[in-house]
Length: 470
Image 1: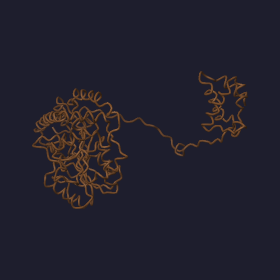
Image 2: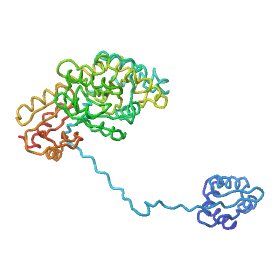
Image 3: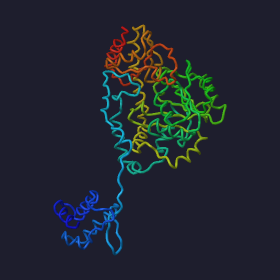
Image 4: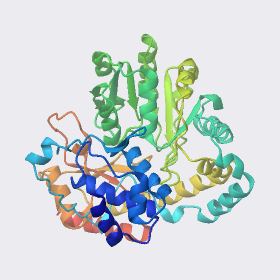
């Protein structure tokens, strides 16, 4: 066997470390069963003489084989081939042949009335670049180190100031937790409040939030709406302990919850211990008529409301930074969890956002966006005036509205007609997860923030043509 090793080693060796070449040859011979289990290998001295290499080289090769389990050594006796175990293929691979199919190519739309996009032409690129350079220069050490699990303290202080000034909330920075998107914060809340609790959500609702609760395997009830928002009687009957709502601009219905219903909801939370309201304030900055509606959390400094907001509508969807305000009574429980949770937003983005808010740029940016979107909305309202079959709803605030159509056509058929003309729209039924009988007129949920000013008129005209309403 030593002569065979000599021949193959000298024939196949490449320009690599000698011991690696020798190790590979012996390993190959073992795998190919040229060495049998328990068979003794040549001694280091004999093999070194045959191959005309150093005994140290042979020693290094043998040690690598021992480390990988191919060979074992017996002191003063030599080196032997270790036990061989045959690799058995998984049962599934013996029964089924899997074929990886080509993924469908995402459809490209000529016009997209999506609710999860913004007008990127409004992003403050110059200011953001300037502040980014400042952070790299002034905060490079803090930026590269681990930050507080709740987020950068300076940013949390700015958020607290903003909430007091614009949302009527008096909160401390210690109550604010910054996270990367609603999925991370909702997951955190479920861990904080308890996976054994009974949760509820409005119906129809934002589909992603619905699936987030479902994916966390919690008991979830769908609560219907009336003209004032979530129905308190149905919420009571569900026996839910925590409810997730969008009171400032219900998604997708566009309902602004009036003061009477807000008080009823707060009373519901106060009636039994352990009840909480998750107030999702996702686009409250964009109110076009009157003053902003005060947040539920600010009513009577209520300690049963968990407030959530996001920067994705005011800056960009890819800017994944959300935050929530935890009631004081829940902070001790959160602090116990905090030891094994880290902030999910990069420090760099947090420091830039801090400077953006602290320098007054955020306020000016929102005002600019609000005026810009108001102009788009006014144009849309004017364009649709001459179509009597169309009624727009829920447009006084936020970046989407409902288009109710007086037609005998099926809602899904109308959506398909638009798709066939490369126009993206979504139907109201898409957001209804109760599978109940649909008794409303065909209704489309239209976002307008992503449309450019110079394409709005053509987009609506082509949508009307596609729906055959002209």
